[in-house]
Length: 130
View (cartoon, rainbow, N blue to C red):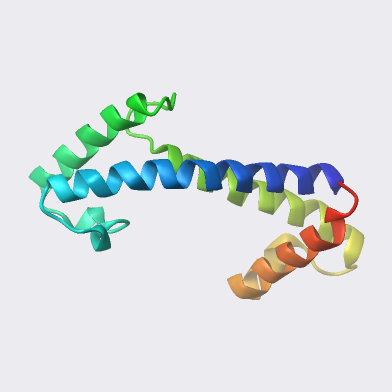
């Protein structure tokens, strides 16, 4: 569980580092295309021509920022995915230790709020041991 908790903290830290960098240039691209920052995360609503320009410029900015990601991948989405996977690993290893009849899927089916609270409480419990 300790290693899984360390992985969650590392993934969260990386995501927190990547987020402001990526969101800054995403907002700049949106503004250059005539949109405001409220469109961030809703790019899929753009007309196809604008969306193609947005993605093309994003690829350029990913490289300029030093991210080594495959084309058509967003460094922020990759970081968010790593955080989600690390949290899932933590839940997978901690559920059998803390509960007899609860697994990760059952916990997740209880709702995201409960799942997230379980992750948070587990991290708080283990933080002193890291």
